[in-house]
Amino acid sequence: MDLSNRETWGLIHGLLLGSFFLLAFAGGLAELYGLRSRWETDEGLAGSVRRLTVGFWAMAVAAWLTVITGTWIVYPWYREKLAGADGAGCVDAQLPIPGKCSPKDFLVSNVSGDTESWHEFGMEWKEHIAWLAPMFATTAAFIVAYYGVKLAKQGRIRRLTITLFVLAFGVAAVAGILGALITKVAPVK
Amino acid sequence: MSTTQTPIDIDTGPAQIDGPPAASLIAAGIGAVTLGLFITLAEASTGTKDFLQWNDRVGPLSGKTILAVIAYFGSFLILGLVWRGKTFALRSILIAAGALVLLGLLFTFPPIFQAFASG
Image (tube, one colour):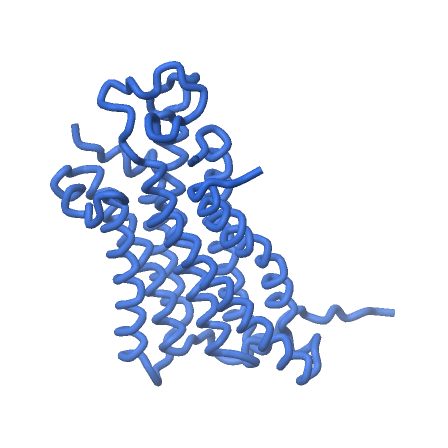
């Protein structure tokens, strides 16, 4: 049982950083939803705001690291042009072949069924939309840090922050699900 | 016997937002729309696609994302400084940021930006 360098980076990108962002979402949402002066004591509110501030910034950092490692480390291995213009390197392949047929080569060659859409739709959407998650998450973290305890009395701003946070999760989820599915069809090895 | 339902939320005063958080919202919209714009331009023009290839291994995605990040943090910083100490009607900021984010989301969706493909 061992992992190649590429598989390890794929795990760091998707399973550690990306999953941390997605899994932390529920906790952040519950804490922000419950941040109301009518529901908590002043001491409770101060604790909630501390947890929210740390948690939201941690999630924003995780989102940035996810897209940076994805784009600059894993994605180049995905898109290598190895198979040649005629796709000869992928002939008879059932999966991408390291050094001969990259995941993108494999998907667009259609040698193992109708796989081109995984790249043309799936990867094209994932590689772009993912970059919106850290921007939305950073903005949500900034608003939480800026207003602090005042958020408990400002329902409109709190709801706006929740909307932005849900949006960050939504785009990250699209990217994460597509990434997992594409990795299943054409893993980076 | 009647019961009174307690409202979940109470908002007092006009719906306003301070300058720096307003700047952060508009910046998110500007970042999103910048990304969408360069994705679509790269699809429509091979010249733009080549220009955006700032790194050969990453391809045009390198230029698109770096420019979007610069647009996000740049507009965040500039608007944040200019709008410091000011307040804005929340509705206006929401409409502007919402429109920009919506445009950004639309133009990162493959069937839409691929409709502009050259050749």
